[in-house]
Length: 115
Length: 112
Image 1 (tube, rainbow over the protein chains, first blue to last red):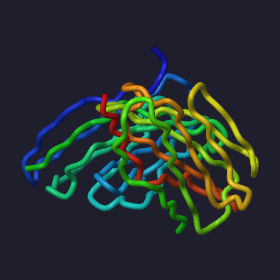
Image 2: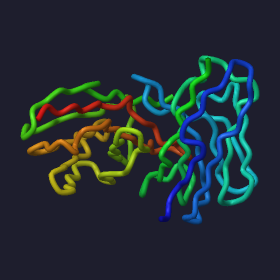
Image 3: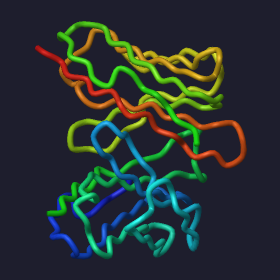
Image 4: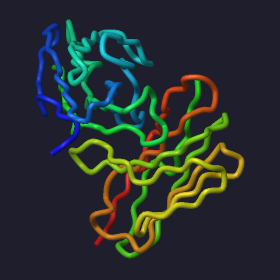
């Protein structure tokens, strides 16, 4: 099925550990995004990539890094996980940057717990 | 930056009831989108609105783009158990490369 695929779906990390969240889309979209979702705070933009080869910070980039590996893949890395990074992470993609006409297509999320 | 205020934050209703929720912004938007997030899944686009005053339906869902361009409403008629989830509004401003801004979400719970 066409869409956005995220791996893993669940992860538990110890404080200080590192990990990479993977995201791939097969819709030939140019732009990709990483959001975190916390109770009562909606979706907050961490990083985004307008097109292959470019990345930019969103609202809450501290503690994260990203790589736009190719047009399909956009990964999010936590170098030294902290309990404050416990959240549900969503990857999304769109045809154009900040596409308002058709909106974004979201993955099913990665639920991360840092203990 | 731009912010969206979505209300109510949560709703507890009986099956068959109608539901209304809304989003307001301090600035003018040129697009309003409504998403639904099922438990354990990512948000899925329900309705998109592009013109002030526009009223659009998708089955039992109806959404409106406010005349002032600073608000939007989503109504669900005759709710059913599968309507349970979190509903998000999202909007895009009119100047430059404005990011899509999301509301905090309305969590809908339905008692059978």
